[in-house]
Length: 249
Image: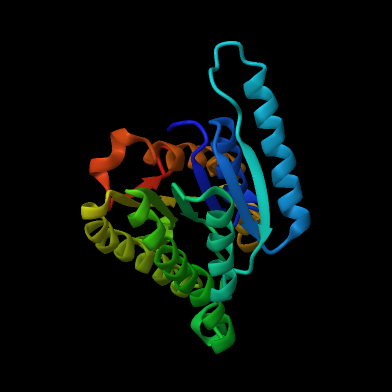
């Protein structure tokens, strides 16, 4: 990945999204982190600045460090996604990478899956991915290419009771990614999905507080995969859903 690419990350306030922001900042990108909480975004920004300091102190690293910029965004509101992309383009004149990482994963068996909760799952996991991709598509076409990475889940192919709606929403992400990648080939827009297993995040602990620590991935493990998919070497793998899980899972 070249220096000073512009990377937009939704769900950048914590967990996997925060780790993705840190990874790209370390690589010298201009990162735009989006989430609902300014407090969490400020912490992400601070950690990215620490990554920049680490980079600048590495005598073997060439080129300048990146920067983290934050924008409070509720991805369930289409107009806020549009504002996120518009403000990024206004500032940097391009978007090289979009990572749709914002997500919700409430557990509820069908008797407890109230319509409002179901609509929230779809709004964040499905609708926001659609709106983000659609909004950035024209930008990437006009600049001659780009990369979109949609965060999915192992639950997309291995759902279980209580996770039916979540698993189905992530299965949609996989199918959406594959089809959209075919549309993007002519425009040099790569589209990928990354489907992790259990990751040590607040989202995991809210749903499964007793999940064994030894069986979880680190957020940075997922961030490294996302970063790798934006490299030119992966351009012909567009459309792939990459499953990330611990050995033996």
